[in-house]
Length: 379
Ligand code: BGC
Image 1 (cartoon, rainbow, N blue to C red):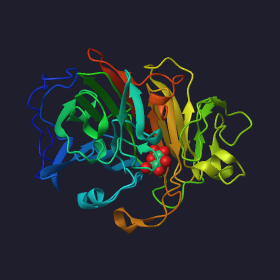
Image 2 (image 1 turned 90 degrees about the vertical axis):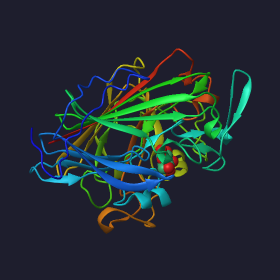
Image 3 (image 1 turned 90 degrees about the horizontal axis):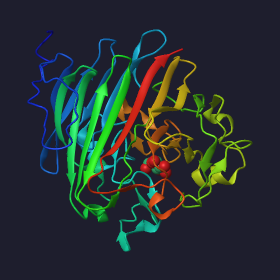
Image 4 (image 1 turned 60 degrees about the vertical axis):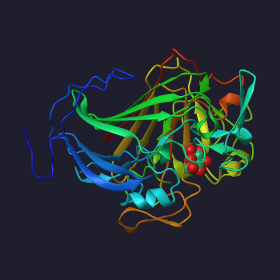
């Protein structure tokens, strides 16, 4: 076993059988996981975990918000580079963040006017993206300190995060037990497996919010995107779906063939105007729960390719339209308009208010599961 002063072996202390059993890891020591203090939030110590595979890929993740602080993968020349936006320090994430790299919950994306009715009871949420609720409210899962344990699993170094969300937290009913397991796989995938249970009927829509730039600099307009989806959910001016599942054919939303992000983003189009660019949910024809390809993105200058796989039926493709040069991130990079994109596998926005969208209701006795894989290759 390779160890050094920096690469502290992590002793996994058992499988945490208390709830959500199912972690396939073998507790053992590992040279593939390093831990270091990363400051504190809410009076609790936060740890930064560095996961490495044998291909030189590296993911640094902290247990505040489950934030992926950096993600380093090779380009076509074998040069390793960071492909996500974020900060060097925890205190910056705590101060202000447009959801850099985090776990998102309880409800990823928007709920109209911060209200929904479940079993005849109206639930009221913070309208933190006025007039709507966004990404779990004022203090969503992205701003919580999660319990963490690292494992050297057969699939790769793994960080298992757990959080218990109290009944009524941010207006959502039911005590929710959430587990989020990140695994850095040998094929340069960052895999996220969610599982959750509740003690009362509730709604749930978890996702992940890394801001990617496969070149590690500049804007993302030259990245080529392929989304194998025939429809998307058009929105109103506040980015709430109208309920329609609109064919992408003949619109700037058709990414069924690889197309540069910048090719049509500034076209005269009401939907692009509402989003300030792409900020929409694509609809996949599939059996929910089947792990399928939702996106492939290629960056021509570095040859980096990102594939997104998920069990979810929708994908929010957001082109960093709200980045405006007011945030300075890692290494002094001032994040300008469209310097990154997000690919967020999810159920559709505002589903609790949209009877024709797939249900997001979770009941006691059921286990919510959602797998998201960001896999990197070169071309
Ligand atoms: C949303 C955007 C939002 C961004 C950051 C994305 O998931 O679709 O509208 O600005 O998250 O909050």
